[in-house]
Length: 149
Image: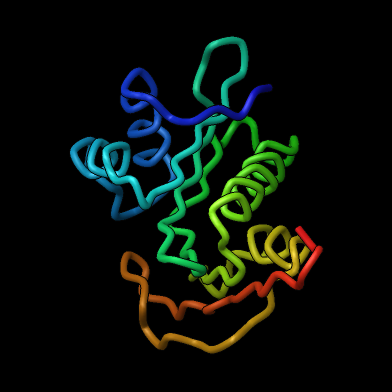
């Protein structure tokens, strides 16, 4: 398993993972746009040359917002999301990011547990944020202390 910066060659498989997992998936064009955005950290997880997950964070000066972390359904609970999150936060720290936000479905207990492992905590609720199905989003935040990655 290797975590690399996403490239054009990953986009087709990333789009397939997105469609497999999310009810309102991003388009290939949206992913291409993130590849070109200098403010994005866009990572791909590869296993024997196959893209099995990805993560995207948008950065703004010392803040970041995680847009997406996704792992192919057949490889969940094998540490892929953990490795993506670790590398994403490492790359964000290199850019001087010390505060990171994300939204997560309230019912997504595995994702929320992963985020808490990395120091995120619940900040607020966005009522009815998600569609298909309609659900609240939990806004989570992580503030990196000096000397703490």
